[in-house]
Image 1 (cartoon, rainbow, N blue to C red):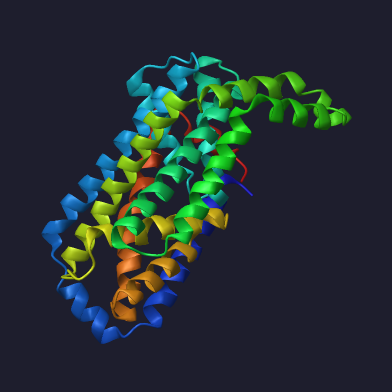
Image 2 (tube, rainbow, N blue to C red; image 1 turned 90 degrees about the vertical axis):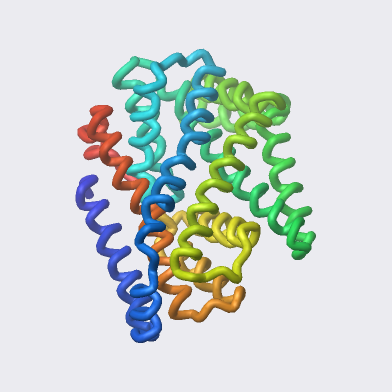
Length: 315
């Protein structure tokens, strides 16, 4: 299936999901809350979403530079934005097109940049988990989730950074003829991963990722205020939004469609928000976060020359 058909399919699914949300809602309540929406809040909301990309762009640029890959910053912005256009792919693996763009524009092997893309997404998820944990701790919620999350993250960092684990795994998989052909590429990619997960670079990247989640969660909080909802604190908004997005990502459903929205609705209703209002909230939040970033991403994709590449991109 061609790229354009994939995008159209995702859009159709999204429209169907949102239509179902609206169909099962109380029309009168939705009508009232939409009428009461303060349109003057829209520019601050979109401005915050745009500002939230800055820490992630800086992280992407820093990780490339850390691994000896120097690309002009302005061009790197376009390359990063190009990945946003393909964030609707399962698990957001479409971000890997950034590696192909760099290969095409600068003839840098994908084995050097694909690991950077993976590490970047890992840091983004880690930042979301930590931002959510901070909210949980401050709000005095279940601490078992905090301990579990810390344990999982610690194990992942250990497996990446501890070289004997990699050497043992490489020795095992290269016994198979298929993998033995790529042992050098696998080793090169591992060295990039390891170089990108040292204590110093990890601290900076995780801090930048946390900044991203805080800023974009602030846009969600302002969205609540735009609808006149003031009972949900900013800290709770961080936990609600980060949890919902991460759940959507790990399901590997394109864009987390339906899953992220459903999680938002469920968590908002736990805050005492009427389910019909929570449904329209989730749709508006996704329009101003996911769909806004996808739209801007297509502009970056066009300007970077990646649109022709994306047409051959397979999920």
